[in-house]
Length: 471
Image (cartoon, rainbow, N blue to C red; front, side):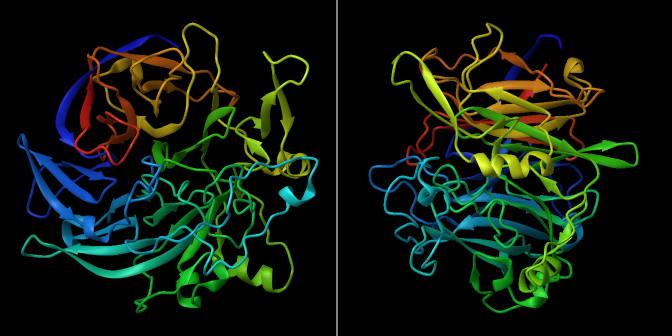
């Protein structure tokens, strides 16, 4: 792999934290416009050097930044345009609903103890009262007068914790035409209730939704499990994958007559990972529910399993702590030994896993994967065909003020784990922090857009900038 250096060209500055970057063609237009969704609930679009407000749902968004915790993973986290948006005006939102704040599923921070079975077999009980918030997935329409209007609610999801809700969580598959919803495992750390591997749990999954066939149901129920959904909704859902911890969306790369799918899985303490797959066998939710009712196991041949919580990327999930005999060393203990064994055969290996601690001079110590996109353009020739990704921030032990990271990798011909290379950028942020919070592309994947925020706190307003990555 060769060194790549790019420039960052500012498009929009002084906005709130940009969570989703997408392009589409507005009805009546002849060119793609960049749409920017912010975590606090605004959607802007850019064209002819101007930025305009497309939709403002800040009043619908849960109050972000709880006392003592200004960092937040809730808010407006998903935006997708229907493949026929130019003709039908339909688009979709995923956000955390105002007024739904709950106490959370646990009263204290969770850490598994391999020597204490109670910590390895927790169950999420009293779900109707012990939860953090409710997420909703909605269908909206751009009316002929140019004003967006909500049409209906597709799903209402009760979430156990404030974090791991996914980001860039709604995307349409060019392969099936269906909307893909990516859900995180529900949060805390180490997936306390093992929701990601439970076939009935909506958390920790990649789900296809046939929005064109989904029925109109007034006020869909608030759910956490597939079996709680009305049957007509179940019939429009299929599950592509499980074993998800937290995920910055899904990206598709044309490959002959099919598509390579790329998904990132945010790590716990050890690594960040990107997975790729071509063929898969989705399981209809109705089959999963029927299997649960009959205490049987559905056929999962060809079903995608990313391995969490038994596996963190290419490695068994570990608890890292100081060694009792040498305080300068870290002791690593497998957190969920039995689950690591069970999922070792079922899981797919990652395309890449990069470490939170990597001493190599040409690498970086990552914190959290925030975007994965394919680049198929020619203007940055050395990146063409590559998988580009962003990390929230380099370890601040080595760099102050904070700086995010842009990097790339490729699929190896032998499909084994690949390495990665940092992409150098020329932009001078001065003394301002720069957290890389999102990565986007246009419809034919020939342009790349980078979302940056000057603080790790969503409560610090107007510190966001969106760049285009150029040669």
